[in-house]
Length: 86
Image (cartoon, rainbow, N blue to C red):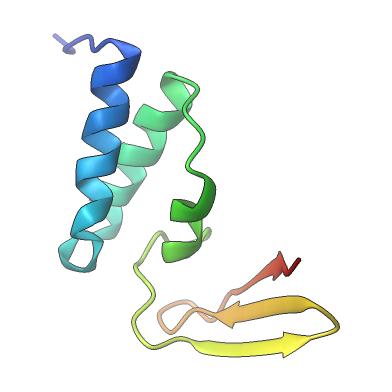
């Protein structure tokens, strides 16, 4: 049986997970993303710490800034993730 959390408990669990994200595996990151989606909790700035495609943590990625857009290249899958700079 799945354990039910309240929304605040789920938010605390997500926050504690992202404190030491460098030791996490992609499968653990996928589980936390699912938990956040299930309880409708936005990840905000935390989603920029890992790749959207393969869910691996960025470890010294290639970063370019062009026309106020930050482009981050994932080392494991080669995917580009773009974010707008304000």
